[in-house]
Amino acid sequence: MTHLSGKEKSNYVQDLFTRIAGRYDLMNRLMTAGQDVRWRREVIRRAGLQPQARVLDLGAGTGDLARAALAQQPTARVNAADFTFEMMRAGRKPGDAFGWANADALALPFPDETFHAVVSGFLMRNVVDSQAALLEQLRVLQPGGRIVILDTTRPKRNLLSPLIWLHMHLVIPLLGTLLSGQSDAYTYLPDSSEAFLTAEELASRMLLAGFKRTGFRRLMFGTIAIHWGVK
Image (cartoon, rainbow, N blue to C red; front, side, top):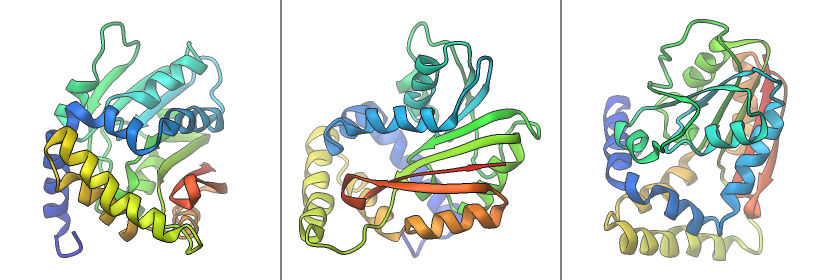
């Protein structure tokens, strides 16, 4: 992926998620042993939603964070936005109490200071320009609004590093190939995770973008992190 230009990476990622949309939720449950459901609940807790809060689930995929937001704060006004039509189509469910929008994280179709919270799950490692994506999220947040990011992160080397490598480079691609037939999609996952920012680097970029009171918490043997900050 490192040899692709910004536009080429954008097109590749959109095509990849179009192809795996139908198996996306199942693979998430299997790859994380079901822990991603708990992580999303924590993302919403850290967003600190008040009644009637306006929430953007950015890179929403099939809408799991949007649903978690409404489960914790039923009066929230939630928008789910994603770059890939097929992901949104796979995620639509009868009775969903939130709206969907096709959106590029680098050029959001929302006015300044629209939302009380912007949350994302496994978005940031896929964007072409992480700093531009952070600035866009800052722009659409109201003063005092919160950003919460759930994503993979490069783990520090430890005794479990060989097992983590095996899980990322052998188990996940094998599962992905068996369930979706899309082997390249599930080699992209570990490759993009290893090429992504460390937790400390992403926290620094959030500060550079203008967020205050930032912090992060590592999960799953240091391979996942939740970051947060305030406008």
